[in-house]
Amino acid sequence: MSNTIDKFNSAVMHTYGRLPIVLDSGSGRTASDEDGKTYIDFGSGIGTNSLGYCNENWADAVCAQARKIQHTSNYFYTSVQADYAARLTSLTGYKSVFFCNSGAEANECAIKIARKYSFDKYGEGRGTIVTLENSFHGRTVTTLSATGQDIFHNYFFPFTPGFVHTPSGDIAALEKLLEEDRSICAVMVEFIQGEGGVNVLDKAYAKRLSELCTEKDILLVADEVQTGVGRAGTFLCSEQYGVKPDVTTLAKGIAGGLPMGACLAGEKCFEVLTPGTHGSTFGGNPICCAAAAAVLDTVTAKGFLASVQQKGYSIVSKLLGCSEVEGVDGIGLMLGIRLKTKDAHAVLEEAAKRGLLLLTAKNKVRLLPPLTISDEEIEKGIGILIDILEEK
Ligand SMILES: *Cc1c(COP(=O)(O)O)cnc(C)c1O
Image (cartoon, rainbow, N blue to C red):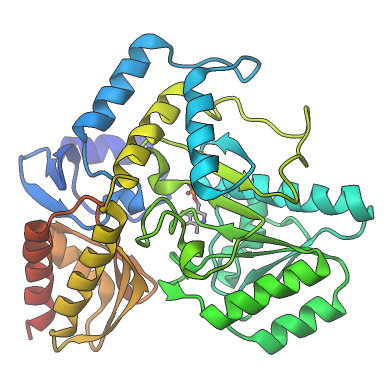
């Protein structure tokens, strides 16, 4: 066993089941381990390396910013944060943004906005937030409460109160809940549940949800931490649903592999957070903003998002020709493969041995390739995967 793995395990908390691979460098869509073995990456570090490994423009932007000014507190202004915020809000049609460092933090910000919006308008007692069963919203104590899976509600008692969960796609249950529970201030949803197993939200449900929220002055919060920034083939996944959430959170792929989260707020609630009510030491860090701007340059280039959709279709059509594949769920380059007989995690382990990095989500094989993946790499990677799936 590698010296690195022993050293790692003797000093780092064992919070992950890791593969016995030490990744050492990367270029394009290929990662290399310590022994020089290469892997086509269909996981992007969980949807984070949206431009693949060490993209030239991205690395130049990061290095140039590191040589200019790497951090200031948020008691000052920087032009990189100003420029990126202006581009992001104008592109998405939101009025303001708060920058933080992760998806969980972006959701914490959304939760605070929803509760304060309601407090400012209606006073105390209207702080409940509805989320969907099987959702995933993060690992902080509050975002674990928000997460609609019992398995996450263990050990760390007491959890933050004020969250209720409702079955995804069940309009009648939603209507009943919003009618009966007058303490609700927001509903938070993922358009495609990522960790929950790549489950696509029903379109009619999303539409009705949006109408109900508007009628009852309840904020609609979209957790686009995994689906956002082009992953689903539109900059925001909500565009494909024809709904405009009051708040949208982003993270994962936003800065191409540097830690960054964003909470976007619309007309109703963009001024809810006032001086002293929220903050983040690292939020809006200049290097992360420069990296995010480089991601935005690529993702907004003419034809890029259409190519993401196209690559998604191409992967799905190849997979549907495989006898072991029951079906493929997801949109764009966020895909979950339902298998007939094989165990998803065993497939992932075998793929790693053959030079292909995959993810799983519940019992599905999950694909989140870099948005820049080429047709040749798709051909090669899916070829390896299908070989494994078709073996007896
Ligand atoms: C990954 C994820 C989070 C948590 O993001 P972190 O950066 O790990 O805090 C929250 N919501 C969704 C939908 C995610 O996929």
